[in-house]
Amino acid sequence: MSFALFGPIVFITLLILILIIILVLTIIGVMFLIAGIYAYSKGKSFSWAVGKKASKRIEIQLNYDRTFELIFKTLSALAWSITEVNKRDGIVKADVSMSLKSWGDRIHITCSSLSPNLSVIEVSSRSRWASTLVDWGKNKENVERFGNILSALII
Image 1 (spheres, rainbow, N blue to C red):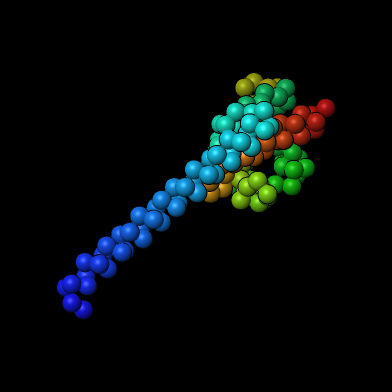
Image 2 (cartoon, helix red, strand yellow):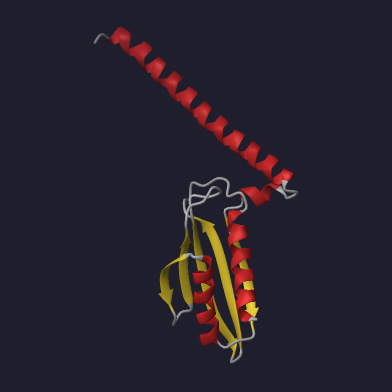
């Protein structure tokens, strides 16, 4: 290979690399545009579609053991897969399976006792893949669904 050919090959390679970068940035921009339009059509803010994590704090008038049992009943009712349990530290982790809105989500739940008959649950949901740019409100939906089922089971 002669030195004269090296120049055009490098130039073409750099040109192709630049075009790929432009294409990727365009795709990301279009995704954000679609997320904004989708959020607007639902009457929600753009951050609703782009948020990658949601959390909620729930106080319950039950003792710690009963509250911990209630977490399992809630997860069972939602058909979420429990991946980790540590009752001593009050931690439960679960996975939500893939759906049309998401490649799957990770649920992190902590349970603690504030007094003998008052417990607090903190539930958070985040996208399974860190590369997820838009969650379409799925994490907020997970947290709200958990809270609603939990409330229904208390009654």
